[in-house]
Amino acid sequence: MNYRKKSRILALVTALAVCITSVLILPLTDVSAASKKKTSKQRTASMTLIKKGNSTFDYRSAAGEKLYGYDTLQGACANAGYAYLTLYNRNVEKCKIVKVKISTKEVVKVSSPLLVYHANCLTYNTRKNLLVATCCRVKGKRAVFIDPNKLTVKSYKDIKLTRKVKNLPKSVRRKYKGFTAIAYNAQKNCYVGRLRGNNNVIIFDGNLNPKKYIKLKGKRTDLLNQGMDSVGNYIYDVRSFKGKKKYSMVTVHTMSGKLVGKVIFPYGRAPGNELQCIFHDGKQFYAGFYYSTSQVHDYVSYHVKRTNTLYSLNNMYR
Image (cartoon, rainbow, N blue to C red):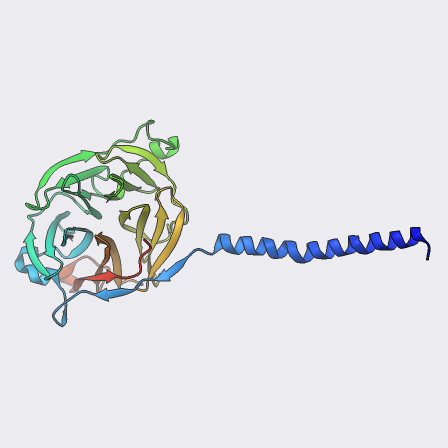
């Protein structure tokens, strides 16, 4: 075999090897990248039921007649060993706040009826020593400031969104209906608020002035909006089951909107345990659930039983 013929054969073999290598390697690389993109971190919530003695801690029963008619947990928060739990009365569209000492499970105080409407979310501003509630459905643009000791309304603020809010699309500003949840972040001295109907968030300064629009990547709009929380660089977006869904979920995002992971709460289907809120005190997270035996709201006619439970959470993303 002459030299030219050997060279042609060698070139042909080399080219064939390159093609085969490309066919074998490239798809694997693409599949791997796609898998990483589609697969996010997910875990099942590790929960411990909060009890008083050997029984489930029923703070509504512990409050006695002070909470008559106020039976549905909504927003909640905590600070310095005390939890603040809003209980909703759908017949008068108001809430009462129950203050509980976490260590002893003692009901310290119950507020009078407060004009916070649905109070879908409650948060604690540690720098101003104020509770802040979102009204959600009625007066959706309103935040209500509450004294944590007297449990009385001090003032309120109707939030406006203007062109000055960074990255806020004109279409979002025009369709603005208010907020379903607001959470105070103590480390960054700012608030995070979830927009009603849009499901993305606005970052506020410590005086609740809107500053920046953030898209939450990987949010779950097929579940019901509930409360929010925010700690350090994380935003915790709380969603409960909808219809026949068999779970509730918290999606965890960075302050820039990147999806960190998902926490599944294996309670679902109506009627069932509805995840209303998660909140924290120091490094400990808590979850609040509301349970109803029916989706019908008329308590007298349908003998609806409603209960509320609290759990400590042991494996949240931090």
